[in-house]
Image (cartoon, rainbow, N blue to C red; front, side, top):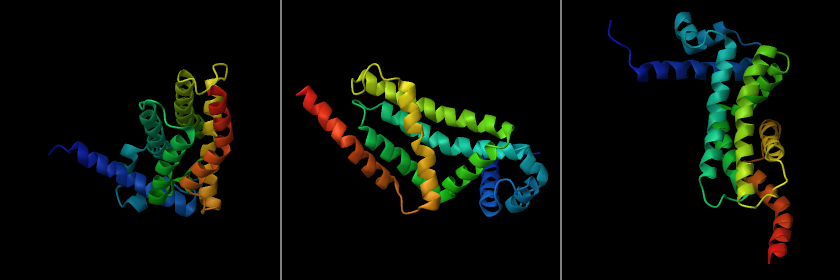
Length: 206
């Protein structure tokens, strides 16, 4: 038998993930069965189960794919010297999320998965692992601000990371329920909120 290329296998995997997204959006995560995904993917059951033996495996893969884009954006920011202002960082992160949401309805999927994780201990463990990666990235960013003396030395980076992480579900919720909110909306709002403290800091340093 001819060997199957890695590109072919990856394409099949992405077709299964796309089918799962469609099913989750159409029927909801809880009501979607693996049989639904097989039917939507138009592949054999064996092909689908080869990549994803359980429905939770599909959810984990989708979450990892989307959240990896956020973590990668934060990492890119951390390589800039000096670090960009916080409102710019948040604006760029949520622009990436907005692009993913426009293409793949990420926000609606995220809300469904988080709701299901609240009742499924197995799924909760998987979701916690993915969200922890993002919070850790925000925490590293906060440490970067502290090294540049733009954040007080006695402020716990973990607390700042948790505060920035809290913006993620809020943005997704508004994208679904109040769709007039955009990444630019969030960035402009943060800029307005942070401006007085930044001005005070600047004045104190002069």
